[in-house]
Length: 112
Length: 114
Image (cartoon, rainbow over the protein chains, first blue to last red):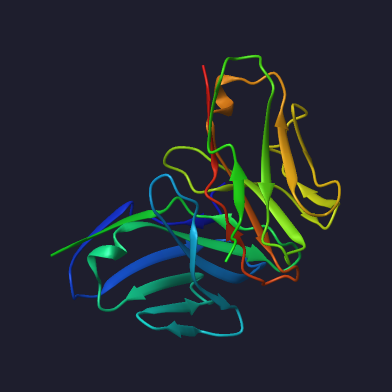
């Protein structure tokens, strides 16, 4: 039972353009959402998070949007840079526990 | 700036052997988490601690797995009688301690069971 889904295993974007990574969830008890970036042979690196009481959070080039009615969130990276090439994981935390439930990841490649 | 550290970074063992991994969290963090990641999947929650108390364990954590955090600082994850299916990246994370606090991950320990 995959409670957090990232349906696009890969995405390729030209440098300077916008990257949009999507994530869907099924559990209404999730109230905190995070995006992590992961390079090979390293642990996930925290990027940005959003609480369920908000619908948007922005940090520099990264913006996360949350649509609770659709149980959907997205990560926008503008402008995309070659150094953004990595695997991006969406994660969610239920309100009554501290564990994170991860999606399967989307591999982003930013080409010149 | 000392982040989360894990030791060893790599471990190769034969089936049936026991292995132990160590995690040192960020110093002021009182919550510590263990996750496991296999190829093509996202990290899967195993267990977490608030100080020395183990608060939650996943059903993934069979009786061959045991985790401890005896003094509320570093933690160990032991796998007894390893199986080939235990081959994975074992990730440790820590956070300040209340729900909604960001979890910061270590570099992981990659286990290969032959």
